[in-house]
Image 1 (cartoon, one colour):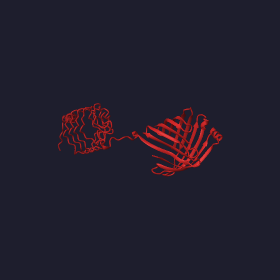
Image 2 (cartoon, rainbow, N blue to C red):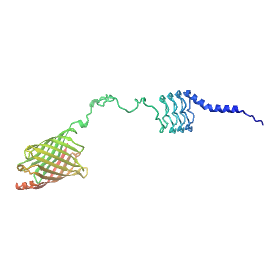
Image 3 (cartoon, rainbow, N blue to C red):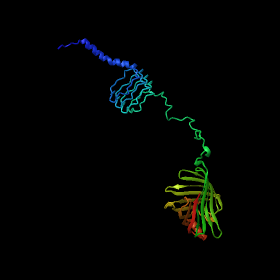
Length: 386
């Protein structure tokens, strides 16, 4: 057997060529044209780029415009790939990456180099995961995003009436409900007291919107025997909401019992536990001040039957013996009514019991004039609204 001996010079030259070949390839990649490179049929699912160093490579003139990477690259690992070199002029405009890249890992990919002029306008990367990519060195200062959704609308985006030039048709322009004037009438009490032989009434009517109204309110009693005397307190006021549950009133009033006019101010609304509450103060022309307090609760038994307890309290600021008035609390009234609502709850007949009593010095004044201090009566009537 013959053994051929190879000289050391030949071995040295071979080793030198092997060492220089990667450097030569790296230098040549700067002018590589990937325009027609077809990687669509290649399976790159297990390719590992984790230690690929491209930091010293000049890829400024590389053209990837027609590069087809539609193959399966789901498991490619770019975690350690260093692309810090100059890639400012790389063109990826036509690069097709529509393949399966859902599992590609770019978590450790260093892209801190100059990529300011890279063109990715036509690059399809819909399936890639860039969750951990470091793009801190990229400059978006001159990026044009004017066509994207969001941002401030132009001044003439919509017409002032929000019609956008579309006509309203034969029905005309719609009217908002809160700006449309309405009216209503509510008769809270219209009943007869059998023991006192008198008719009690209380009603209010209004006209206006949910924000501003004019209200006419009246309450009193009409005697059905002897001199048929009428005692009433009527007010005309301006109504306006003060908060969610409370409304304010201010206006003028007239009291037939003492034949005097007054200035009125009050508040009405719903207290906690759905108690309908009202408080009104009247300043008469002679300096007398009257305060009326009232509270009412609706205890609903079912969809039609309702029990309504109600209490009222009246007080004055000074004595007026001519009109049977004493300073302080003068009268307390209470009644309980059982109502039955019908016709969409707009009509409700009722039966009940009412009770009235004098308070404080008013009790002594009534005794001196031989008038009853306390009175109670069975009452029946109706309440309605429309």
